[in-house]
Image (cartoon, rainbow, N blue to C red; front, side):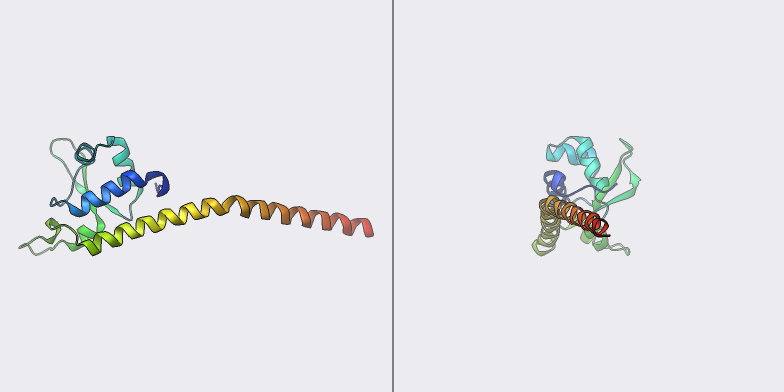
Length: 142
């Protein structure tokens, strides 16, 4: 299930910035909702609705049974060999800025499409009407 950016921008930006800057490797939806002040169902819906941004772990919380979530970007930074775990370090300003820029660009793209949708539909209807009239006129000439 993929959601649109425009209608979910508030929860989406809060989740991305929180998960980018926390020292925890991953979080459950209930803990995120509690920390961010959003409803748990909204948080879980956004986490699952943007699979290109958020990774759902196979692991679940022993207390609640909820899956853990993290940013794909942070997950990719984890080392597999032990030692220092860079996933515990917050993302850099540049990395976070790239994510925020991507999200705002997607939101702007959606807004532009919505703004153009009505004029494009009207133009298509006008073109179809003009073709219909032209076809009727051709029939009248014969």
